[in-house]
Image 1 (cartoon, protein in one colour):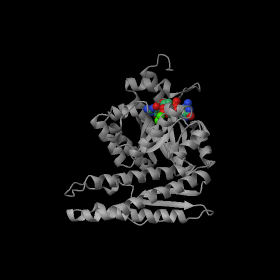
Image 2 (tube, helix red, strand yellow):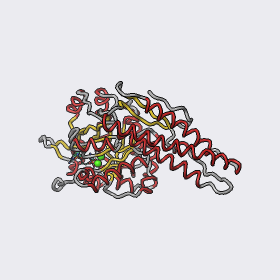
Image 3 (cartoon, helix red, strand yellow):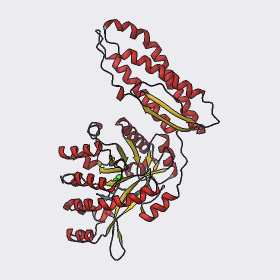
Image 4 (cartoon, protein in one colour):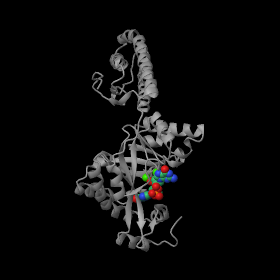
Length: 397
Ligand code: C2E
Ligand code: CA
Ligand code: CA
């Protein structure tokens, strides 16, 4: 509901009188079980103490273009708050919402950079959120500005994903680092199988686009468990915490709460990455014609990397050692096959291919084994899969 008869003048007065402030909603890492992010959500605190929600004045501010005045004026406030937040927890990355209109103002990005630099806050501790519909309507200049933010190590999230129905191709061309799955998707997820499929697909889409995923509006424990199982990186919602005034947020952070996590979602994600990698290797090989014109294989695109595993004391680490050894061998064979350049090498490829198939299927089944053990018993303390382009050997930590 909008404030009745709202005028630009009222907003302008509110800005002069310092009546806008931020509440912060904590964001949970589903990998570590700890809070590692917050989102700044604006509130209008009137002199009489009334707190007005953004839905009552932000749409009007956007329509009239006054939003840019608000955004610019609120950056110093946001940065000031970050100093206290980072003092309480130095791992926090703070998100700041901007509107598409902000980017049509040429002075916006330079102002943002210089204010961040003056504050002494590391740029990587800041993330900018732009809604899916705004992201889709960006002009070329807007896109360049966004790309500049990313090049300067500032995180970029597509907000309210699912509300504007962007296609894979549209998203692929946007330089964002993170996909925030809208409440409309998470809300229905546990209610129907179709709802779960949509949530699943959104998370997979984020991963295929090499973005992290954040589920918004997470308001129950079952959903948190489900999100961990499908490899979603972050959750935000009332189940974790409502948006909090700054002093309450600091108290909340100081409690250093830890949520119980299962790592199997990340093992699952590694399986998907791995299968995708095998598929790419196969495509590269099969695209070769009789004269062996192999399509160049781009290692930076591949899931070639190392599995980093930290297992609990009770578990036999043999399966993990085996997984890493077979994976490494499989990768070495793929490298030889893919570097084949001349027709004479076809014989070598034919010779190596069966070994490659066999090892690939061993890696897949070992990953499956690790995954199901983790699902049943939570055996892994920590799991990750890191890309490496130099083909270093796999290791266990
Ligand atoms: P948003 O960016 O999608 O922010 C999330 C909204 O969902 C917040 O509402 C938050 O309170 C609410 N929310 C979080 N968890 C739950 C949950 O579990 N269940 C339910 N039902 N709701 C949840 P809020 O603070 O009223 O903000 C509304 C919108 O106003 C924001 O949506 C954002 O689009 C806009 N907004 C807020 N602050 C700013 C700002 O500083 N600048 C701009 N341009 N827009 C802002
Ligand atoms: Ca947002
Ligand atoms: Ca949102």
